[in-house]
View 1 (cartoon, rainbow, N blue to C red):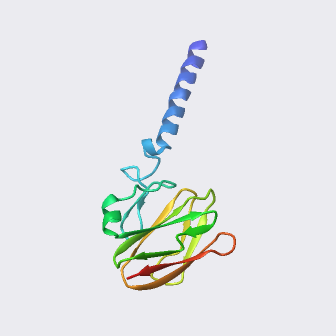
View 2: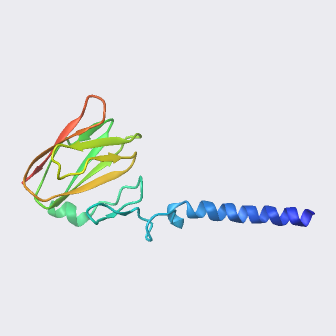
View 3: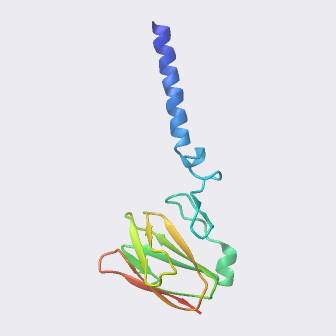
Length: 145
């Protein structure tokens, strides 16, 4: 009887360990084959949920990337100026989900979980206002030159 209980305990520990391993990014956890969350609506690879992708040095050097951080419900900077064809990344540094609503229907509104990010490509020139879900109705603008 003890042998059966001992075997059952060992088996339970092994199965529990496998279950925990597969639920983590290192083990896959239902994410993409490379541990990422999959592909966004524009066909670009997304980072794992709650993980901000590393900044691309080449994009920063040639000015083709804009970055807006959300801290305490406010956008920083509130206005980001980028050339056409740039990637703009919104990073939620708060510990709650934040929503971004774009007035221009070419951009999808987004809910960004705590620590997560949302990227979009701006192809045309113009001014593209957006609002957020923080206290005081924060707002901002992407200016594409």
